[in-house]
Length: 63
Image (cartoon, rainbow, N blue to C red):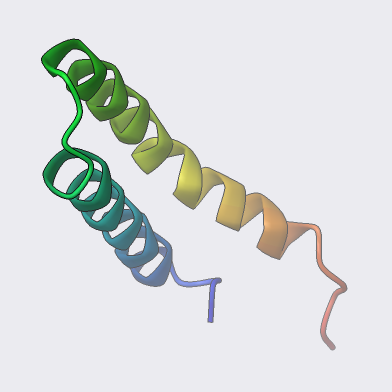
């Protein structure tokens, strides 16, 4: 299932949405911390699909 790029990007959007919601809306952080968390989450948003693709590629081959 993770072989599909659409699924990997859907997981990345889910990650971004939930991370930002929990950390910014529910977290009640000061402004500078919100900026740092937002930058970190956006970077993670691009790393998640790449990591999932690497995970799929490193698995055993199916014949």
